[in-house]
Image (cartoon, rainbow, N blue to C red; front, side, top):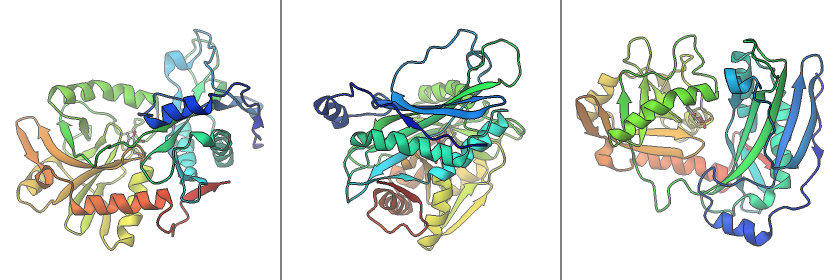
Length: 362
Ligand SMILES: Cc1ncc(COP(=O)(O)O)c(C=O)c1O
């Protein structure tokens, strides 16, 4: 398989500096998009071809395009951070590229070579580098690579044409004015993923399946929903868009990858960062009853969620049917804060990068 080289066809009408600066002053999340996007096609027999960087624009799709009917779609999320010397670096893009390949396998889609994934992200960040917020804060440029089935037809089978795209959106600090613990509703009836299903793939269907439970969490006064395993409704899996960690003093535990949990890049990075800082970091099983009991008896000292969007989010109030408790007195725990600072410092380039995670662009 040949690796396409991205042909650069930049916009003749990018936003003015003043317009871009106005957006960057308060970007929010996922509300604004940069001037360009990258597209790469795949067709059966020809493989990956026609990689282009073009002006950001709507797609024209036939109403019978397969993705609109059978949801053959996968995506990724990663960030580019401004470094102290003004350069830009993305965080572990190869990890996202490998997860993208795993998602593609699960959905019967063609695997994009790791080099093409990184080349596409690099081309977009280089072209739109002025969109990467300044160094020092928690702002970043969020990259959204994704792939859709573009064959036209209503037959139910893997498509024979696909389109890979990368778009980018400036992201403000997730928490303005300091870390704020999130409240969690533990859903004991609805599940996100089942054994043999596609919970470990990053595909839109998993998020569609999570929206109702997320809305129910909101009616319980909670920010996020936590899913349990689909068989026993007992073992803690993850949140709708973040993995979980349980802190027992100097030991931290995250639910093992069972096939129905998304293997988060942040989750994986924290296993290493925590060990570097001298904590015992483990994968294991935590039941919902254990969570409640250990919180109440004080052995479970902190709980936090982690993911690309917020890096680390402390968990404050936890609710399940018939019970409610507060984690760490509803405050951000010391371990949570320390791990968050350590990972963010690597990403912002203010701490050494001993594991070679930062992918520097010119
Ligand atoms: C379901 C789910 N779990 C976990 C994560 C965290 O993954 P990562 O750390 O790679 O962002 C995400 C976010 O991407 C997610 O959507």
